[in-house]
Length: 116
Length: 118
Image (cartoon, rainbow over all chains, first blue to last red; front, side):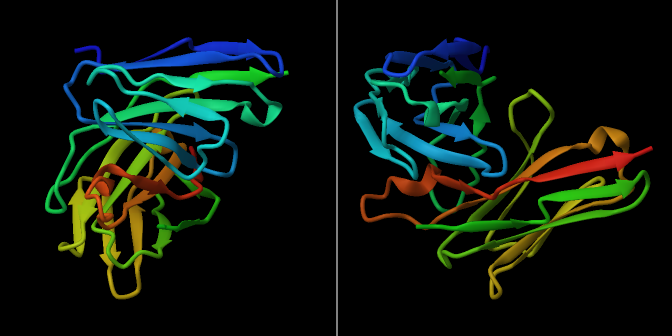
C-alpha cells in the first residue's frame, strides 16, 4: 500500500492564482481531512469528509474548497491564493469509527506552499 | 468546539532524563486522545493513544495518563535518547455532533519541540 499520497511536494504561487492540492489514499478509509501547519499553531483542520459526497468545514475553511467524488481522492482547491495561505498542508485519512474505538489518522508527506 | 492547550512549547533535556508534556482539553465529551511525533521535514506519526475509559497506557519508554475530571492528559518519555528529539502534538477527538459525523475530527495542541542533548 502506498498509504496517503500528496502532490505536489512544493509549490510557489503568486497572489490571486488558483491551484489544487491532490490527496489520495489506498486504504479504503472513509474519513479524510486537510490540515495546515504553521509555526507555533499546531495542525489546524481546514475541511474534512466522512465519505464520498460528504464534506464539512473545519476550524479554518475560508479560502479553500473541497469535494469528495470517490473514496480514494480528496483534493483541496485554493481559488485565489493569498500570502496568508503560505503554509505546509497535510492530508490525512482514517477509518470512520464509533465512540468505542480508536481511529489512527495516517498523514500524507505534506505540500509546502508559498504564496508571493 | 473543542480546544486543546499544550505545554510547554519547548522542552530541553539531557539524554537519560525524563520528559513530560501536558495538554488540557475543553470538551468533556471528548473520548480519544492520541499523541503524534513529527520529525523535521516529515509527516506526523502516531506514537501512542488512549481512550477516555482508560487512565494510563504504557508502551516501552512512553506512557500517557488521562485525568477526565480535570480534563488533562500527559505524555511521559523515560530514558530519553537523542532520536526522541522532535515536535510532539497532542490531540483530542470531540464528542459526536448531531449528524454523527464528527468521530474522526481531531483538534491538535500547538506542539512541543523536544530536544534531547547527548
